[in-house]
Length: 357
Image (cartoon, rainbow, N blue to C red; front, side, top):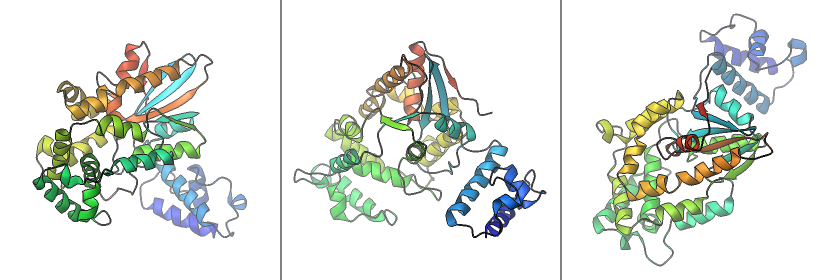
């Protein structure tokens, strides 16, 4: 019954010190926006559907978080010009660290928008399939033909050691190009007990929310563009070293200092959750990486940041005004001297961090 579900949700909240929990079940839940109306309006004796129960549970969680100003805030900025507004969210392409639910200010920015723009269109099936095909050799060669015997043997061992259901046999490992296998190992290595099955979790979550809210979706790039202009353009020697670095990385969280990738990503996520771009950039160190002239970093940032800045500039320049959009790309593209935030400022825009309060 509806009454039974409401009582069960109330009992979950009553285990904590929560404002208003000493009120009646109906008053407490209606005060949080979980239900609307009084006992008569709610038809408490009616059978509660699973969908209704899930909606009430979600509203309870969000209501409690919002009442306490809690939730992951994200690295969120806002730029306005010509009657247009563009929210700028720097994402982190991992799923770990209990990043949900989002803070109300971040959810409100999504729902206030008409347009949502991402690095790629996650719903473009043809692009996804083409990118997947790019990750495997199609010329009759295998991984064994492109890396040293030592690295190949390490790759086979690493594939067998991956946790289920990600374990790979040698035949499957041999199909992968070095960059694709390295990215897969890195992605799995970053998972924790809070991880789901969706890669690029924050981006895909925002994409899903945007689609559910009826936003028009666009993308600055495509999967195929990224595969071609980032990975496929790297030298063979670099690709071999890229794979070897992934194979040699300790993902147990037992490394020391800056060499511990888990600690580094967790520190980035900590900064992301409290909307602290300075702390994020302090951990990430984008400018120092770009200045080193690394092949991959140049393609990742120096070659791509200008396109993202140009997209944001074009959006804000729309002469008819009244447009509100949401640009969500990797946080590394937002920060630093070549990033979107500095790029827009250099073009004369005022860009401000969205207040969480």
